[in-house]
Length: 120
Image (cartoon, rainbow, N blue to C red; front, side):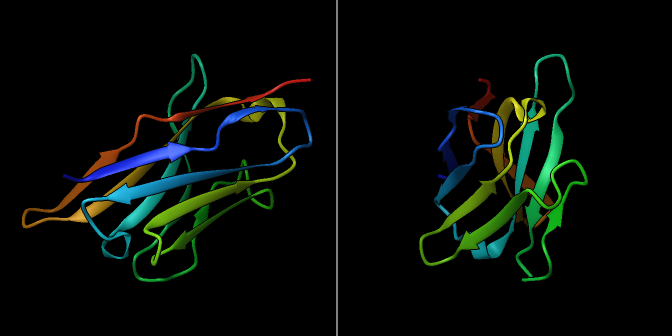
């Protein structure tokens, strides 16, 4: 069964850092693109960062560029999102997803999310 589980969220002060983890099971993350999204209350879900199975340069949204870094550890089947210099605008539920190739296209699998709250 394909599953991704996020962890590492919490309450952090402005300017602080957090590292989110996304542990995958039921598949190898080397097979697919791994993504981090976030959704703040009342806002649309936003793609934050993406790591490609091809090993190409990762994608990072302009809103977090220079502050957030996505990385993957294929041996641990885990994807990370390192978040630095956090601000109130980063408060959101963060979701990991795996985009895996199938016979008919690409299937995307989502985790339950982890909450990040930036507050003093």
